[in-house]
Image 1 (cartoon, rainbow, N blue to C red):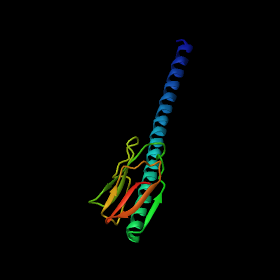
Image 2 (image 1 turned 90 degrees about the vertical axis):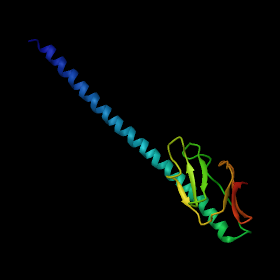
Image 3 (image 1 turned 30 degrees about the vertical axis):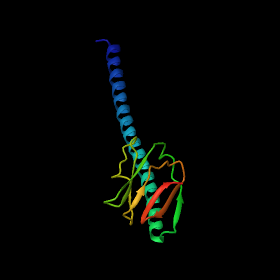
Image 4 (image 1 turned 135 degrees about the vertical axis):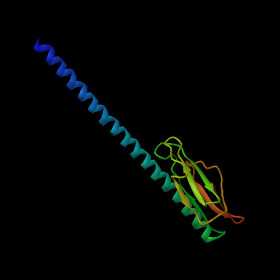
Amino acid sequence: MDSRGFFSIDVIFAVTLLLTIAGVFSNVYSGRNQAATWIGVGMEAKSTCEKIAAAVNTVYANGSTSELYIDLPATISGHTYAISFDNLRREIMIDVPDVGITGSTAKAATTCKNIVLSILDPSKRVRVYLENNSVKVANA
């Protein structure tokens, strides 16, 4: 039997095993990286929800002469987002569709039931004020 042929088969087997192990580690790294990105975007979206909810609750508690101006991030980790309000649950929610963050993930409760949330441009300053027994959230 020729020893060169036997050595070549061992090398092919070793390289195949090495590539398989490298592929597995690459897949694990990719999955963990995606999970870390999702968690970071989710926390930033939740923080933005809480900022809006805190402003709404403060204006509602202080009465008709109160108004606040808040600055929201233009994007959340480089992704566009949408803000909504659920009157039944009294929750402000943020959706980041690029990453899969939904209102069930990023939300914050408010004490006020009557909120009028207009379509917001997050890159502009947001005004929160009380008018006609409703807290209004609109761009300034």
